[in-house]
Length: 198
Image 1: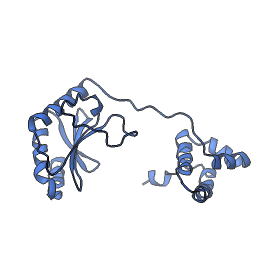
Image 2 (image 1 turned 135 degrees about the vertical axis):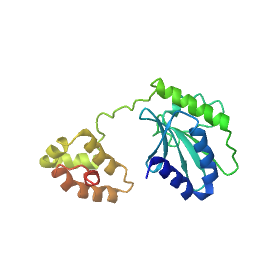
Image 3 (image 1 turned 60 degrees about the vertical axis):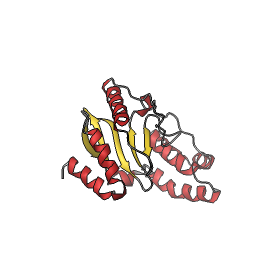
Image 4 (image 1 turned 180 degrees about the vertical axis):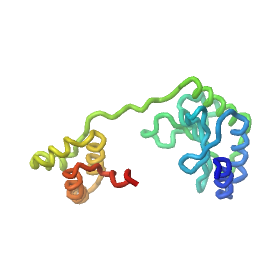
């Protein structure tokens, strides 16, 4: 099945918003962007670089712009879907009562395309260092083999383990998680390695 057929199937599957998604698709088709499917949703690219996409949800449908932080947003429609997490992506949500203004949507897509052409990109900052939670630190301080194994892991794997303990609310949960990860650390494995091998 081609990407175009997949997009048609995606729109057909979301009956509630199929008319609106078809209209958005027709706007995208007036641009130079290539229609593809990524993460199961219609996505539009320029020379292999992600520019925009659209998706249907239970109570709304949306266009997202991968480097939307650079859009001027004269209509005031852009918002950060995950405040504090997402640096560059911006989303334009539509509800049942919203009307799609082809000219305005096309202007946003064209601006995003031009920004992509100019290479405007938010470069993610790599995290440095690891904030080790007290429960894990106490265990590392009393078990030299565990400490050596932990220090032998990549910083990313160390952060995964530290975060896994730190995000638990209850002390009992922190302790049970600590007991679970000790054999994994000693084996030199990352917390999510089993999923990466799939």
